[in-house]
Length: 416
Image (cartoon, rainbow, N blue to C red; front, side):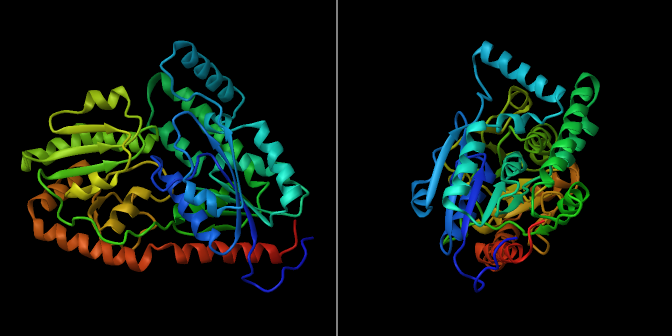
């Protein structure tokens, strides 16, 4: 049994596990959100961090590292992408071996024995009261804490089994059996991780239902994502030429699917109504198939130091995602920046009441985007409402308080 904690609200010792170095300008939305959450909690608590770093990852933000009591980095297994044929073959063989053992590829990339050993020692020496795994792939380390007087929380950004099921259903031909193996691997993995948690945090009702089925007997709590609110809004109208922006890492299948549909189906329809329009696909790891699909007026930037200059100049931000779970950091950031947003219902989950244009399907999305491009006053009005709503609903104070309340509740309960 854990000792009864003193008065509520006192500083706690919190240890976080992350698959990326947290940084507010990281190319991956999850790394940006993790940085913001840690910064908020570090204002009132002692925060420690063990994180992995892979090839091409940015350094952890120095200012955030200075606010943490302990920060340690370990190399993530890889490389995940390499021009070297031998490295690519090795990666492919390891991925197939992982699937044959019914273990998700991403979990295998993040399986670092040295981190598990360091976690055990740090829990013994520093004595955190809560250990929180950011992402399901870091949840594998929570088993190392069985029998220790520490509460274990999984911060589930996107249920892996649900995402794998969508990919399996959308695949045809020779890749379908491999996707089925990955689905089975995620089902087995997430159920196993859940057994070693005291609580699971998700961001949307859809994800709560998914995880409740895989974490029986464990509380599954919804704490919607937040985002850092810029001091000033960006240009609500955008600047010429009229630009449509989609941002994200294209190593993430839902982002790649949306970008391919934008380039091949949605944007050509927009250009029929607005011939001067351009499409900016901003983000890391655009594959050859996306480059091949990009037609006239489409720019693929690759990784950029910051999305903000592109976001500032864009007239409309679009998020036509139909796959994946969680909340879309790109949509939160666009609303907070004061931009007109067109989003699919899936991309807007967790943002009930947000002033954005909901559009389902490629034709409806193209119509909504073209309409805003043609009506400057309408998109300025929408952007202005988005900024005001974000200031009222998307700040971190509410989310940080919800995590603190969860920790206090867990620390008052008897260990199972």
